Length: 231
Image (cartoon, rainbow, N blue to C red):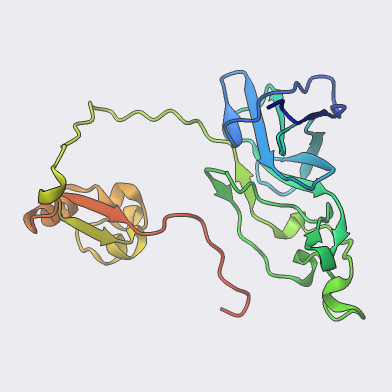
């Protein structure tokens, strides 16, 4: 089957077509490949921000569209780059479409975030309290209120050779836990390591878990989440 592909003119000559995979922002040592799914968008822009994530410094249109994936490669940026998306398309709530490029979007495939959401009516794509309510179109920029995505270096120095124990399934005992809650309450975890994977990996913690006969630790949801405005 032929690839469904549609080219877009890059906002800047330095932007190349890149690849539709992997999803998200991927650093290759020379630049970053951005890849985002949207079947109904008409244009996708990557917004780059300063080192604090406060000020938008550049807006780059992703030049390629392959099988419902928008993508492009941007040179001379790398780990630590703070970014977000503005996605253009139809605003037709009755049909399930609420594209609004005034609203900065997090990358759903991001591996790191920076900043906190500041709940405000300008976060919403519609104007709260206006006639028509959620069928209206809000033109306020939400970027100052939004957390942003961060490009990361996928390499990790394990500092020592990793040793994986292949325990047969019939002998496996799984221990489920939350990183934050467990490390916050364990007396052997230092304050600076609470809420971190490093805290969970401290010798006192692993020794205790192993003393229970546990062979595997399953971490409950570790993805970023945002509390509702009323919490």
